[in-house]
Picture 1 (cartoon, rainbow, N blue to C red):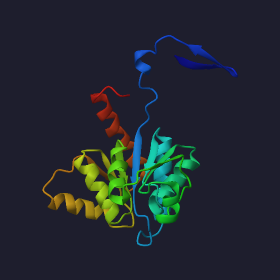
Picture 2: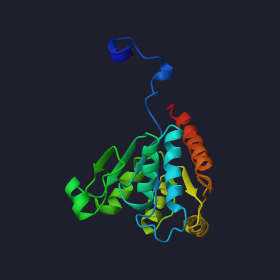
Picture 3: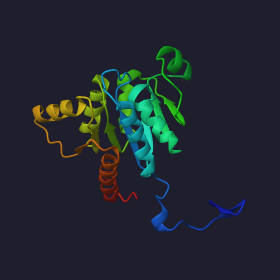
Picture 4: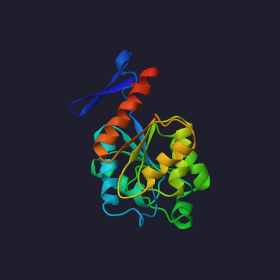
Length: 210
């Protein structure tokens, strides 16, 4: 049974949904990975993070983060300024541990899932919850999330900026003797998200999700 809104009232509809609408509710889930401490990221890093989060929403996505500070938090701010949905996956097992143990924020997030698996386990669940991953200025934790997404063959978009993460990823892939044809690089948040969304849509066509 479906609910249909007519004026200020909802009416019940018991008929089947059209085939073309059966996945109409499934929005692309795009993760943003980046440093929780951004002192090394250079000028305009946080503004670029906000622009990245905003573009995810403008282009029809849901933003997923590790429910942390720094680059992902600013991406969440950008997403919420566009009235988007933000989901966070916390390393903590409860709100109390999230705030008092890990000293992580609740701000700019619609839903926080408390994994209870610490940072390494959180990273796995976070990346597995996304259809694609955006990489900003990062540290070792960002590299961990990148390698999980890379091994899972997910589309990965790397934002180039006044930091070294893009060069580090290019170097790792080259020295790892692996192809990086699912990794794209761009310094423009809008273009990067556009290209990443296109990759996800191609993946969805293979399993009839649209």
